[in-house]
Amino acid sequence: MKRRVFLKATSAAAGALAFPAIALGQQYKTEYKMSTVVPPVFAWGKGGEIFANLVRERTGGRINIKQYPGASLVQGDQTREFSAMRQGVIDVLCGAPINWYSTVREIAVFTLPFITPDHKSLDAVLASREIMDEYFGLVRKAGAEPIAVGETGFRQISNSKRPIAKPDDLKGLKIRVVGSPMYGEIMSGMGANPTFMSWADAQPALASGAVDGQENPLEVFMVGKIHTLGQKFVTKWNYSNDILLFAIAGSIWQSWSAQDQGIVRQAAQDAAREQIGMVRKYFAEDVEKVRALGVEVNVPTPAEMSAWQAANRGVYAKWKAQVNPGLISKIEQVVAQSRKG
Ligand code: X2X
Image (cartoon, rainbow, N blue to C red; front, top):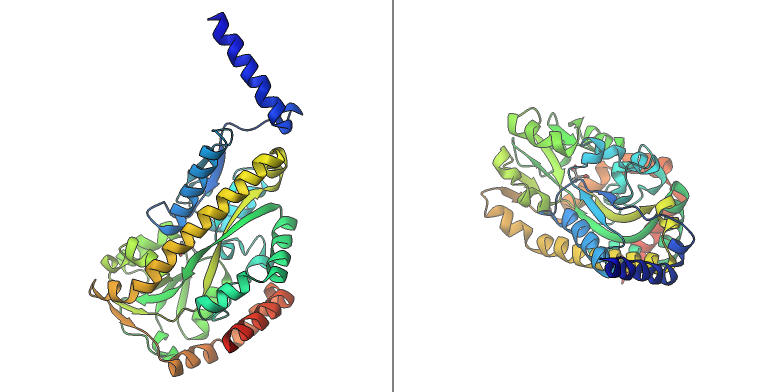
């Protein structure tokens, strides 16, 4: 017994020497709370799970990140994640910046309507050192250390009433949206009636017919079995695609040793790469798979795409000015460049 105590004490001392943050008396918490809106059956939640597991493995359990899906740390209200992080309720973010608009509007730059029309242009933006350095600087200033970027996926509209081929077809439809008032204005700009609600409330509202439609990546549509909630018509218009931002509350980040910071950043980047792979695999196959569920899927022609973009020009200009005009102009330049090549 005595010997075991002695062994434990020496290994703890060795650990302290190897990790100066601990030697300096900074306390590691027994659990770090990570919020995700959806659970690991979805690529988004899976990305969080992979990250937490890698961190646990690679730190030998020193850093134990526990996932709270369903945004349960904020009672399901995903729009409160960032402010809850600032209050110390959430330690680790693995989420969509659009959901944090009411707290940090300047980082909701990737979601303007049709800003990155395809993966090629999105990748060009994410590969731009200048854009991402500025973006990460804004996240840091807002109180979190950004460590990796995944993808939530191109958002497509679905509804229970009729095929949507042109802006007018949206007239009068009640559409559930979330995150930012921008999504509401996009819908009302085309004559629909937007209703804001969390993901937790969206499914019962679709099931009861309280709303006619919603917009989400088709991966979420399939895994969430949204077709069983009366959603019969989908339009694959790729109108908005948010990043999945992995970030650590600033004070927590500071409490970790440089070595652990490096491990955590690498783990997030590995998880994000895998998560993006999952989202894009679904994206490549989604039209066929959703059709196989008995859903009518409309893939717009280039002329139809131009009509969607034209109908959103006003909303785009207004929200660009409101969110972060400087950074969004840089994004536009990179997108334009990528479309030439
Ligand atoms: O609630 C949604 O629609 C979701 C899961 O896609 C977001 O959090 C933006």
